[in-house]
Amino acid sequence: MPRLLGVDIPPDRQTVISLTYLYGVGPQTARELCHKAGIDPTVRARELGEDEVARLAALLDKDYIVEGQLRRQVSQNISRLRDIACYRGIRHRRGLPVRGQRTRTNARTRKGPKKTVAGKKGVKDLR
Image: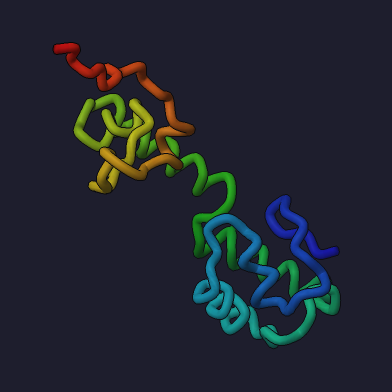
């Protein structure tokens, strides 16, 4: 099982697909990596040699921000927004949608399950 940047990539998939299991590497970046490293993207990951895996690791270290470094950068960006108390930072702090989505209905992914608030029942007037 090939291991890149501390992550086991699936051996039974094509190299270009296996590379997308790394955080920060999508399909386009995976194709670029294979092209720059001179690796056939359709070869299964288990068939990669040690030198090919080393070339991929070197390219990832040199040219791309992935895995732990990218996660750290994203969390630092969010904490910066929180610290300066801008609108987006406040939304992050409150756990609400950040990018302008409606919250009167929907937004259950960010807000969590419904918290029912006891309201007034429709009491009929007695005349």
